[in-house]
Image (cartoon, rainbow, N blue to C red; front, side, top):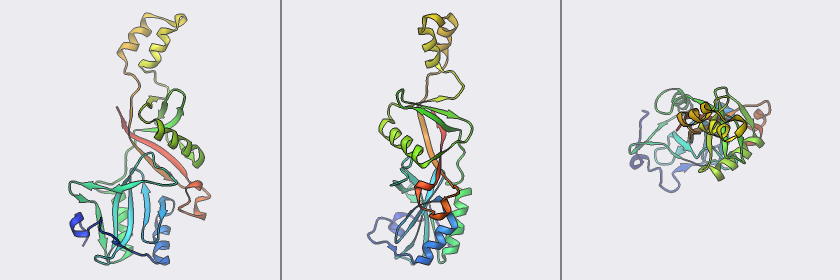
Length: 236
């Protein structure tokens, strides 16, 4: 029976918990999730679905196939994704079954139901200004190829403390203050609006979704032939 298991039952941190997966088992998992696969090892397959991801493996402790939810360090490094078990209270979210088919089916269910279900994005990354440490957000989805996304990911990781978010097509206090400081555009209205309107906000709750391209099917775990969507649940 599926269940929320605590660390004391499955003992997630015990050494050599995972049993090696066969070639057929790995192929079955990879073909099920395709472009969502971001890491393959001899004893586990990691997939990423919007905010949450899942690690699928077979446990030596009970000989069951397991899928448990993981959260990634965002924005995700596509070359070396960093992730950890997702916990609620003192229990991680995961399910174990006797068959791999049931485990895969449960993973798809966790993507749409429950605490790791589909993420509702409020904004998407439209562009960024490295000189001014600003990212620009839009309500429309925008995909980035590997090279451009990697450039963004590395810049954001290095400068995340200084980066602020602005909405495309919407003036904030920073814009009005700039206008009021330019003598040719200085008006009482610009000064007033600059004081009344909120300044740029700090980006929060970011998640990267992986998107398939025409080339992805050649090697599902290759990050270089995928596209990336950077979404934000909220900013403050």
